[in-house]
Length: 202
Image 1 (cartoon, rainbow, N blue to C red):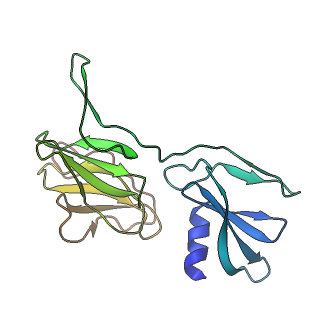
Image 2 (cartoon, rainbow, N blue to C red):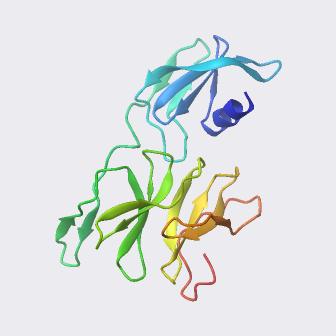
Image 3 (tube, rainbow, N blue to C red):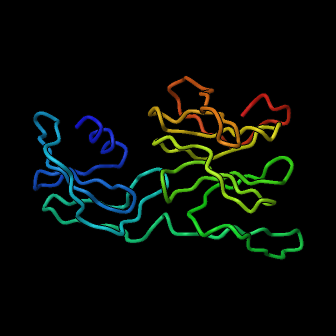
């Protein structure tokens, strides 16, 4: 029940008059019976509605009125997308990468690879290699990993992760080897956007 409750907190739950907490997992609304006096979930959750628009970080677009009426925005934030290379003259060249829910692409310093977030599995960091025409997974933690940026050496990727609760910065080898090293410990939210020219700041 403890793990279930942590999941509910992350996905914007609403308390329904029926005595259930309703929350979203990806694009599906789920409901679980909830005791408001003990602040405890009871039993297993069940899926009640699919196709609800869910934002990249887990917030879902729905609400429940006092009489139990539910309103929601339909759609998917995880729709497949194509990677496209655009030259300076505006010429567009689709890349042979499979359609996936790509987010926040960042080209490596030597231009040979692109790091990006994928939202259709466990919100991890992946890398597309232009020469090998291969998509390789870098992170595999159950937490949400996003906004990859390349270190100047081109061998490591800095990214934001929610794996320990609050957003913090991590660094990991671009080939996915080893484990991710946490860079920030403060309770404030940190988001990776770019690396300074000297490589000492993110």
